[in-house]
Image (cartoon, rainbow, N blue to C red):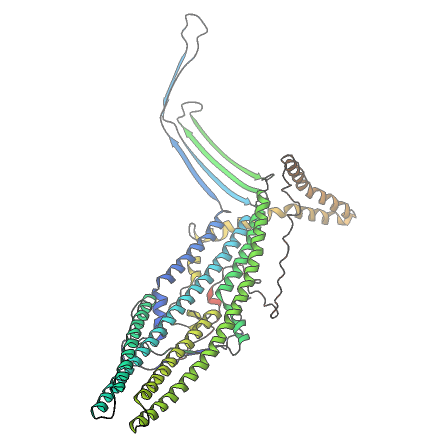
Length: 575
């Protein structure tokens, strides 16, 4: 089953990019490329994923062969004197001196650990996939910050330009008021009103310039270089309906997918806890040699190969407590996944409403600019013929200014809401918007270090083969029973043979259960061993009250590590 559904393949992004002859002009796409290649926070997240990759190697190592070599070399000077039992005869004295040395090689190959290694590897794989989704979430968050910084600079540059032009217009209004006063057509009140508006405009311009410098500083921190002649922002075609947007977010939101993988890892943690109550079988080999021994044999060589089995009998309730704890953790994560699903739905719905409001606000603001400009022209003409005052003209000019600033802010809000929606949908990354950049694939690091330490052939086949064989050891008694039953079926005593087989298989388990129960009762503790492999946790039943529950995207995943490359392109740019 593919990790991502293809029901949203019709999504596309088209960019309306203005052509520019300036060499240093920077497009929206180029800014995101700079972020992707140089942002330190994104580099840190990539390192964190590589750090998590090592958990798989450490888990796999617990089921593999280990070898240790030890040795010793030193100097011994030994003197001893016995007792004399015959009068007149001195006691016998012994003297020994030498440089003894020894060396030992120990090799241990685990054969069966109750499924612990397999569960640890599954847990590590789920954690790696969750970390990769965390990296994708970090990439989207950084892209969102860069995109907002980009549109903030554009907004503040346009705001500063509008306010600068307003200062120039009010300066002309002030000069005109003085000219009318000089010819006797105006008053000092008109001059004072024009001066007041000009001072307010200069104050607004100073604040706009300060805000522009602040936005440029934020842009430089995120993108890595100062903004220079930023071009128009691409426009994105979004899902046709709110329900389509929610379905897309359910399939692709990295926070939600990370929660799914964390829940899967918690399920593997239950198997890890169960393995602590199961036998451990290992094959131990030792080879040792000693030379120039002062006491005992002067030379000795020894080689041994032994099979060792360890059966846990009593743990004071520790193993069972850890199993319950793992089950509770799994239940908690299941509820957290459901909460994340609802949070994603809520976020999409809220941003969708903000988008509708931003579109209406932008349309109304543009109409306001058109009406305000017409009104200003009329008031200006009426003021020249004496039917309007200077204050009426200044008020009309202020309305034009406010309308233009509203358009700039509405455009910024619309773009910001679009970026937020794309981020929540899980498509605002290099693959989703098809940035022309060499994409970082976290699976490459995993594949590169997965076979380090041994040759690729040995590391790939030999230890895994041993581990596969070890997993079958627990099934050997059952296989023998089945073979015996099939053998005696023609004789008509299959039922008796099967009964005997069942009793034989249950003897070790019953004996262990009896010993453990007795010890637990003597120590005043509840029995720590359950032949039914503990009581299963109460199932978590979560009903979706809003719509039919969406199927989980991780239930049928391939247990192998999958690459983000398998995710289909969600949106693509058109220049």
